[in-house]
Image 1: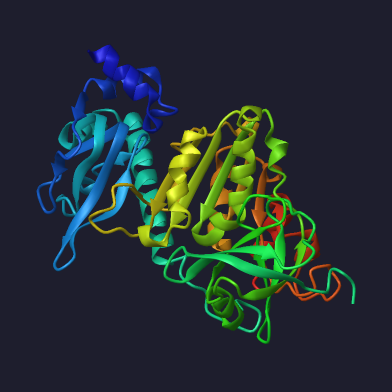
Image 2: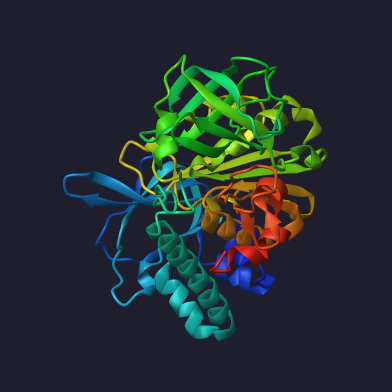
Length: 161
Length: 272
């Protein structure tokens, strides 16, 4: 099973550039899971203690908004990382997450990742870089969406007519 | 007055609401038809008594008719959007450069649209799908503000049936939406780009095109493999009046479709 997990991990974008040795160490912490559509990974404000690397399917990050229902704030798919809140100062899920389509993913306990990083600083550096990269990508995407790029342009002298 | 300056009369034969502010008009010639267009080219549409605006053709190349998708953002576009079947509008064109999607024969064709930017790309998608076997993969990535603001949503299934991969994402969604929620650039990675053998056609708000091109360049494509559609204040349509100048380009003549290699240095200049 560990070989299967290592192969799935090696195929994931998160592991691009990692050495075989590092992939094996990380794979030893992972469990390959299959999650049916509709099943919830976690709910908002619960303790954040895991990381998933999504291999297939789609996950919705959602938030209950009074009067508007459960809103999807972002979707994640193959190659994405699910569950970054444990990296923050308050390790609780900021949003909920539910499988929109059947999902295959590698599941890690955050405590195990942190312990591995403490033991192996070189791997810790690589993982930190990747997790930071994922967080920055999400931040940039959120900023772009805030711009509301598709809104109707403001009429101006040289603009829309 | 030359032929390119004299509007031909076209009658609205069909009007379809796409979104709350966007309409697709089908036009039939009321007299002699204009010459046929290439995907990506635009026409100058004249709402008589109000004014004239450039609008890309959004329908397939046909024997005589034209299809235009128009967003109501100003006096002229509002008048055109309100045009009822039977009403006559003036049309000049076709003008400008085209997508030249056939340059991707034997390669992957990647079409990336943001908002109403799908309208100028639709003729290229339809043309490519009509010659599906001449391409490797055809991928269409579509981004919109919300599900209600997607244009041509009823066609995506047909495009998939004809052999395209079509992925749709929105910025905001209600609980009923079961698709992607993200920026359109986040669809590029999962699409499995083959950067050496891909031609990308990109249309949408300029910032979206810039960010998309940046993502494609980061994935290993070159600027020459990316084409974008730019718009400025097109008026004469033949590169004489200079209103649509963007640096060294007169976009009514040298555009709207330009290589990102030419466009990139111009898109971040504040004064342009």
